[in-house]
Image 1 (spheres, rainbow, N blue to C red):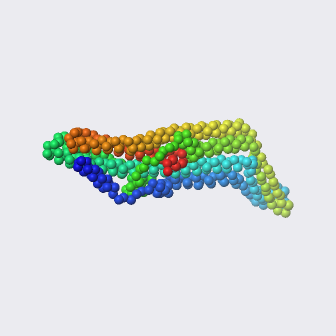
Image 2: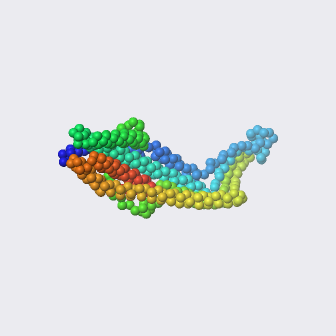
Image 3: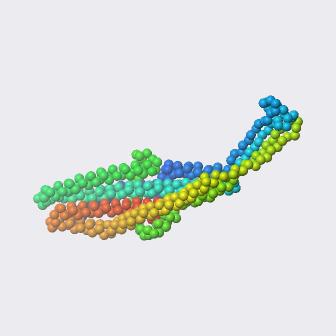
Length: 416
């Protein structure tokens, strides 16, 4: 019983040592900082700001044309024959094109819908960055939790090694017990190095998303917690259809294509031009001119082809929307199954597998003290506890990363 008590004390001491006082890195703060600093979001906002300036350009009238000139009689100089010849004059003209009513408004509406589509890129960028930050945050949190498990179990294994060496010294244990414990300790050291490498990678990933130098230090993230996951796949699909920016963009592009059909159909209508002029005639009365020009749309074949082209564009936009919806549905189902499975497995490990494995380890240690079992049984149970603890936190990280992807696709918080 002294052995069991000593091992328990070693585990507690190891746990305390691994829980050194570190500042905590709150997920909400990290996401907020990333949304402020990430250049992808800034680029999307600038594209939208530029796109918003297009509708006013499309709705504007063409620039007027001002012409100045003269008609001379007798000599090719300005003013020749002015006042004596009826055809000699000096004057100017102003001409203004007038598209058929509704054409400019339709072009402006097309540009406005394109700007609306670009605005969805901002929401998509925000959701993508937030999801990537959360995934990097959860994976970084996993490295700390896994490191705690390895540190705690290494302390336990070192105590077991000391016990086996002591028993071997007095002839109560075989040398292979010591060798097996030393081998397991070497494996733990390799695992710790791998976790440290993963931690450095995740810190660099998170710093890149935050726009910070790769060597910037980060506090320890909050520990991962298993939260209830009671979502229904059909409800998530409905949320995605309602809120996913990529679907909203495709839906807007369908509207834009339909407006383009109406705009192409309006090209069968004539355009106009209004011209006015004033001519100085010298001693003779001034002459004025007014003219209305009509651009007759005789090239009907070209305009018919343009309408057909835009109609096909509507069909293409609708097919693109449906393709995006089905692709999103497939990704939702994949991540939904991952989240629900990981949550179920994590709960099973936490509530059933780990308690049973720890009881088995405690029982084998007690039996090893009395000589009822060999050291291999203790090591086997030790390795099982270690594996189950690592798997528990791995499933916990997988659960949270899958949920973050679901939130990205639905545009809605899934777990609070």
